[in-house]
Length: 298
Image (cartoon, rainbow, N blue to C red):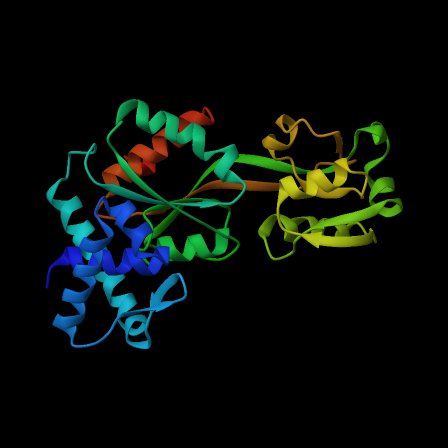
């Protein structure tokens, strides 16, 4: 079985299109289709099927997809071990929670590529909880996440980068008003409790016996800021730097006492075969926040 045929199958399933898979792989659509047919012949079953303009896995294709992913990971791990010490070669698999895609990842990548311009990086986005689980399962090498609130296996490590205190974000016309007064008198746009930052805000409201007049609940800090700028309410969110470069008509109002913080950092797969690449990424992240390089990564 040719590993390239397995790679083509996974690319088609992930993209939902033979043409898109061909573009990603640098092949013609005819070549990708031929690879899929050869793989199907070797396995004795049909793996993909057309549905209108889209292409998806058959029931048999779904069954073998996990094995296909595992096979490709094993090949990448073997390549990383063989290329140990050649950090400019290989692929690093990085997870990033959504808001860090614009506030943290670009600066970190700038530092990485300044030293290793040929490094290949695959970026996966998702919730911090899911990304932590993927790192601990070996599906990702490192992830930028909100600090996990659960015990992680010994194979994974947490390394803090920065903290974002909770603030009230309000329309700029409300500048100078009291934070608690705003939270109880104005319509409230709640940061979704499905994410850790939203859970932190919810806990603060309960601990301080504050009962806002909730208008809606939404996941997405920039979306919340846009709603606030339209005069649709106030919100309690982490002090995300990108809010203040958005050009929106919003203001930051501090909480009356020391605010709870959302801690952001790296979850690292300590025994990844690409640990040399993980170390490089972690050092670039530490430099972005002027933190000393963690001795635990030495």
